[in-house]
Amino acid sequence: MNFCSDCGQPVRVGIPDDDNRPRHICDHCNTIHYQNPKIVAGTIPVYGDKILLCKRAIEPRHGYWTLPAGFMENHETTADAAWRETWEEAQAKVNIQQLYMLIDTTVISQVYMIFLAELPEPIFSSGPESLEVELFSEDEIPWSELAFPTIEKTLRCYFEDRKKGQFPLHQCDISKEDRDRFYAAEKQAQHLS
Image (tube, rainbow, N blue to C red):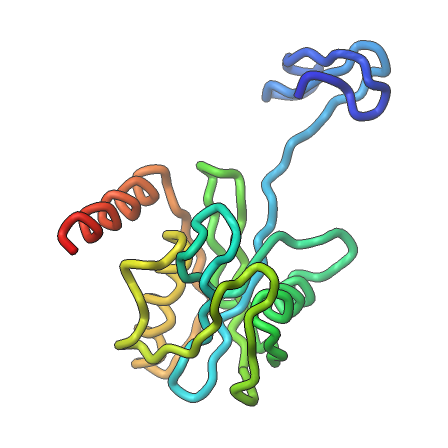
């Protein structure tokens, strides 16, 4: 950030009084600009024994598979955001059931909130952010073509829990090391094919 979004004057980075982190500060209008993590909300749309995945039509990770998810908007609940993102990306109407995954991704300052959702009918199609939308059974999941480590973690937890017949709330984090390992494994798989 170079300029204040309130008054347009240059900003500096400093630690405000009574704070402990560097912030963008405008000395002209005394505004402190806080930058906070973004919330990504989405669903695991389940139809029978299959999961609905979307192939991304946008960057980052164009052409890779993901669960329908995206940034939460102002004035909506996390469940509303998850439902909206599922509709926008997969043109699928789901019944939101419960919060299932809470993943902190501090390396990119995001929090993923993924809900279990029932897809009552196999009605779906590609939205503007998806190249394809498809139902996958566990053995059909394109593991080497998943877009993000958060998606792989969510799907692996889901299939393990499904074997047990219990779906508790999972809370975890994806570290820089986890991300690096995910992308290194992907490059290795591409090199071998």
